[in-house]
Length: 501
Image (cartoon, rainbow, N blue to C red; front, side, top):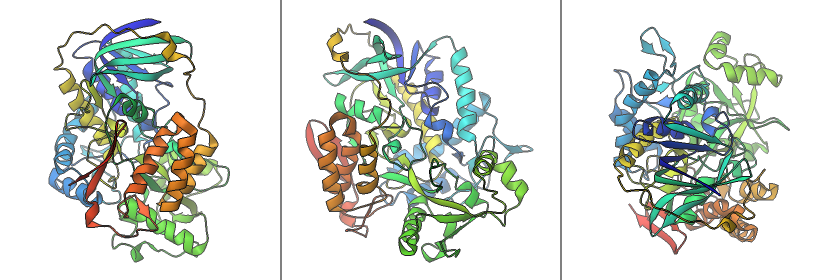
C-alpha cells in the first residue's frame, strides 16, 4: 500500500471541491480526489444559477429575509447572514477567474426563481450555469501546480483518531491502495438524491461522504429534509431531466391534467412560490386527478427567449420530440437535493478536528426545512472559502499512521445502487411519508446493511419528526408544530438528539 502526504485533502470535485482546491493551492500542497472524473459531478447538472444580491435594487438583507422565509423557521440566521453577505464577493471572484456570467452590457442578466423577491439569479450560458463553472474551475485546477488530481479514487474510510482527522484511505482505479495523510481534510462529496428512483442527480450521488463522516464520528443534522424539485421531465422510460424554475421566473405556467392553472389555490405567489409548496401542490393535483404528472406550459413565451436563455433545456426537449413553443411539457417532482448532512459551524468545521464539510454534503444551517432556489451553488462558494481560510491556520505536523491492508479487503467501488434500495426510498421515504411506511423502510434498510446506511438515517429522522415542515411532509401529521422548532442530530455512538432552537 502506498502513502501520500499533503497539506489539504479535498474529497469531491464539484464546485465546492474545485473552488476549495484552488484556494487551498495558495497555502500548500493539495490532493483533490474524485471517484469518477472531473466532468461527472452533480454541480455540472445545476441549471438555475447562483443567487446573490449583486445589483443596486437588491441587498443582502432582502436575500436573507427570503432565505429565512423559505426555511420555515429552521435556518440558522448567523449562517444565512454569512451566506448572503459574502456571496456577492464570491461571485465576483469566480468571474475574475474566468467564469463567463451572462451580462447585458455592464449589468448581469439576472433570472428570478421561486421564493425570491427580486431578480438575483446570476447565470452563465443561460440554464447551463453549473456546467460552465465546473468547466472553468476544472481547467484552472489541472493547471495549478500545487494541486494533484486523483480521478477514479474511491475513499473507503476517514482516518479519525480521538476526535482528530488525519486523512483518508482510498482505492484508486479499483486496484491501488492509498493511505492519504493530510493536515486538513475537506469533504465536498455532494448529497444523496440518487437514492431515489426519480432523481435529477447523476447516479453517483449516493451520500458517500455523509456515510464516511458518520462512521468516523461526525454529527449529522436535518437528515429528514430531502428536497424534491417540482418540475422534472416525466416521460416513460426517460431520465428525470431537471427543468429549471427560472423558466417559471420568466412566466411559464403549471397546469393540471385538465389543463387548468392551479398554483394560485395553494399560494398567492402562484408558480413563484418556494419549492416545497410547489412540489406539495403538484403532488395534491396528481393525487386528485389520478395522474402521474402535471404540465409545464411555455407556449405563450417567446421562442427566442426560450432558445437563448434555456438552450440546454430547449435541446433536451427537442431531442424527446417536444417543441416547448408548441407542446405542453409533462413534469413531476423528483428527488433533487439533500438539505441535511454533516453538521458544521460557520467555518465549515465539523465536530472532528481538521475535518471540514462544504457544499451539499454539509449541513451549515443555511437551508432549514426548505432550500431557497439557487442558494446551493452560493453555499458551495462561500463555505469552501471559509473552510480553506480556517484550515490554513493548521500548523500541526503530519502524524505517522499505519493502516492494515486487511481494512481494504472486500471494499470496491459500487457499480450501481440496488434497485430495491431505491424502491424502498421512493415508496416509503419519498415526498410524502407516514409512520407505518417509515417503520417498514427502517427495518428493510437495516437488513441491507452498510450500503443502505444513509437511506436508513434519512428514514429514522423522518420518523422522529412528527409534523410536516418544508420538504418533510407527513400524511399522518399534516401541520407544522411549534414543538418541532428543533433539529435532529445523529451520532453513531449515541441515540438521536433533538435540539430546540
